[in-house]
Length: 61
Ligand SMILES: [Zn+2]
Image (tube, protein in one colour):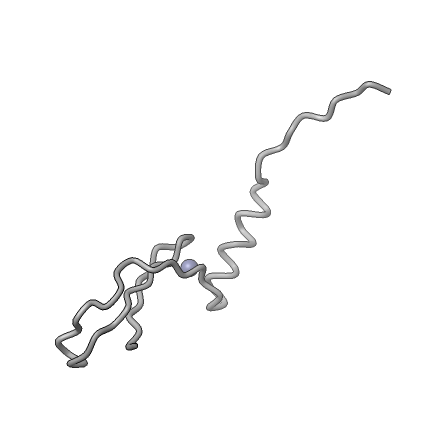
């Protein structure tokens, strides 16, 4: 009784799990730039960046 369990930070296992998510294609996308003009596609695109692994993708709107 009265024992206080120390608050644990995220374990290495959890971090590894997140990386697995990215490797499996489940990225945590965050909008970087909305309505950026992509010269190659000739239209406006939204730029996304994964919060976890940092890769970037463009998506036409
Ligand atoms: Zn990712």
